[in-house]
Each structure stands twice: as C-alpha cells, then as structure tokens.
Length: 181
Figure (cartoon, rainbow, N blue to C red):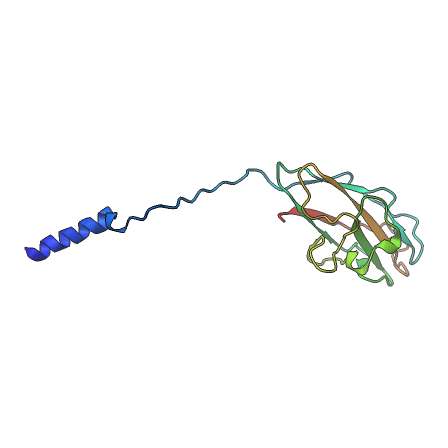
C-alpha cells in the first residue's frame, strides 16, 4: 500500500508539472511574409549583329532590372547557356565568344568589364558581388535590391576569332534569378 501511494504521488507531480515550473517562461513567436521573390527586366531580346572577328561591343541600351516582389529585398544571380555553334568562355577563340555582364547606372566602356564579369556557358549561377572579385559589380552591385528599386545591367560581347557557322544567328539563353540575400 505504501509503495502504491508513493507511485501515485510521483505520478501526480510529473503529470501536474508544478514541481518543474519556471518563472518567467519564454514563448516562441514566429512570423513570415507571404509572397515570392520576383524580378522584372525591360526586355527579353538583346542582339549583337554585324560583328567582325574579335570585335568588342557593349549593348547600346541598358537592361532595366526591377525588384517587383511584394516586399522582399533581393540579390541576383546570372548564368548563360552556350549557343548551338558557339560556346561562352573567359577568352575568345574560334567559335568561342566572351559575354560579360555589369550592373552600372550608365553605359560602361568595354574596358570597365573585368575577367570576373565574364559569364561561362553552362556554369552554375554566379551571385552578383558575392566574392572578393565582385562579379558583375560596376557602380551598382545586384545585391540587397529593395522592393520597387531598379538597377541597370549592361552586356559586353567579344566575338569569336572565327565563325564556322557561316554567320548564322547564335542564341544564348541568359538567366537572371532573384535570390534571398
């Protein structure tokens, strides 16, 4: 009987929890904004036509990049695919072009683009401004872009040294993606 009463008293203490009360108590509160990251660009087709071998050219009009998310600050990544006949690399060669990207408020000179600004065909996405080399950074950096803010992106093309496609139009798919900072 004595053992049964002790067991009942222990069970009552454990179940009631009053023996382990703490004052004050912490309460975890969670909140999350709804929506998604989103980016809008001013155009989806940019052409470099009439190129000569090894010609270097910066696009004539900027690509306006706007954070059109509902309240989220964003960073941007860039990536590019090779075309059917040309590859995109860090140096031009036969059937190999160089395409660089730079966030800058005004049209940069071709020399403003450094090796860190070159896109490499089929490489993993590169985060703007993410390393000490500061890829794609001019006077704007593609990082911590506030909602409704617009920055401008410029592209530089260095044409291949030769073209085995007999002048066929080459299509490179460049992807700009909004990511969380």
